[in-house]
Amino acid sequence: MNHQRLYGQHFLISEKIAQRIVQTARILNNDTIFEAGTGHGILTRIMAPLARHVISVESDPTLYGDAQSTLDKYDNITLLYGDAFEDYHTFNVFVSNLPYSHSRRAVEWMTSITFRSGVIMVQKEFAQKLTETGKTRRAISVIWQEAFRIREQFDVGPHNFNPSPKVDSVVIYFEKTRTISKDVIHRIHRLFSSRRRLVAGTHRRLDDMTSHEILNHVI
Image (tube, rainbow, N blue to C red; front, side):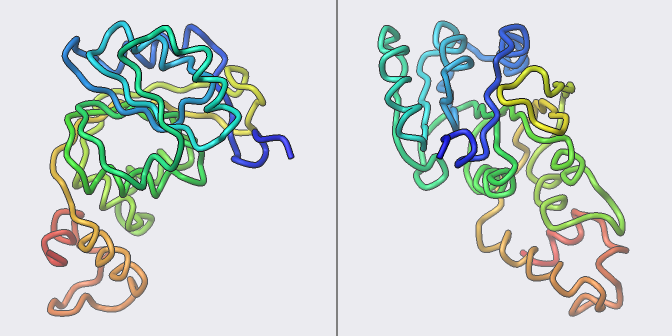
């Protein structure tokens, strides 16, 4: 099976968009970057001259092998094969073109660790979930809104990828505002599983509470 189809990947092919993503990341020369998904290395090779160290993790064995060949000239890139969200690495900036199937998991992983800021490219539908409020809000909305602050975003059309997705994508620059433990994240999801009931210990429904009030209730 084609590994693009197997992993649900759409690879960025626009050099212009890649340059804009890296510029949006606001990388400092003493930063350590953590990239989830090396892909064909279009972002990796642009980031390397700007940062002190780039740690890039790829789960596809073919892509990992290709990256070893094309990126071996950079002595400040560490290429790793495996699941980017299984281990913890010390870094300042997170960068990733996130497949839709991994978007929620990636956000929750980022929420539970400490770093300064990041840039992610996600499907526009998922980006909208992150900023929802009121009755359309989900657990992931609360988690995102309490842990991160969006500072900048721009749209990326399907023609900038190979293969072209059927939906638009959006690039989000964000700053980390707080760390939320995995246990608290689990409690938020459990609370939303019974959102139509009154929240235990209160006389209010979940939809009537702010994200901050929900977080404080489960801590």
